[in-house]
Length: 212
Ligand SMILES: Nc1nc2c(ncn2[C@@H]2O[C@H](COP(=O)(O)OP(=O)(O)OP(=O)(O)O)[C@@H](O)[C@H]2O)c(=O)[nH]1
Ligand SMILES: [Mg+2]
Image 1 (cartoon, rainbow, N blue to C red):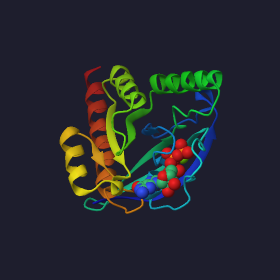
Image 2 (tube, rainbow, N blue to C red):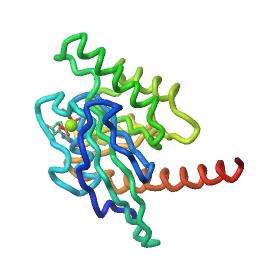
Image 3 (cartoon, protein in one colour):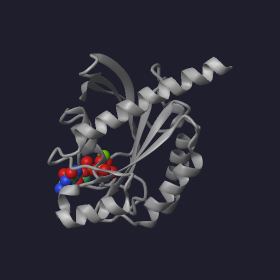
Image 4 (cartoon, rainbow, N blue to C red):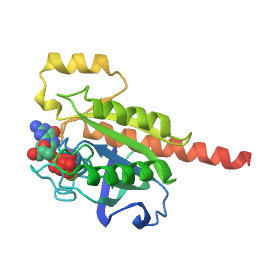
């Protein structure tokens, strides 16, 4: 069992240049269309109500928000530090075209340029699994990730689907995970997967260093 035992807000950055130094070099980026439930998931994973702001007004998160989190592996009693990065929701329709353009350029620069990112978490609303915007984000990530970076797809708001619909979704996307932040279903498993990916990544990078 892996839990997040500490979490705190670090800072908000308006763009990549203002991103904070990341000592522990372990960034986990959360990306989603607006209103998919990103802030709710961050709060559920960290068990910290109010860590990230939840809103019913889409597009609330306009800055890149950073959170320091500490994982605790209960079996080995070892801790692991990471930064959770809450990116602004993409594809928010109500902003003007030019803002949208700058916005997306900013995000894509961040995603492709930031060495510290070890894991991209792409959140998708389980009721709309085939939106063009999500397909292009998936493709973009797939084309952009480096050898030492992983991608994880998570379907949110799974409480909105009945059992039959859930099974169909899992069959169609066998590598994706599912979660309900409001019902706290799937969050333990996600924490474990994030933690294990970061640990595996450390091993990979140590091996790479040993080869140099
Ligand atoms: N039924 C259900 N509703 C959820 C769940 N997670 C979030 N919501 C609701 O979805 C809405 C948006 O949630 P947020 O967590 O603010 O979404 P966000 O992706 O951070 O949105 P922006 O920051 O505005 O882009 C809120 O009304 C939440 O209460 C869930 O697991 N189940
Ligand atoms: Mg949010």
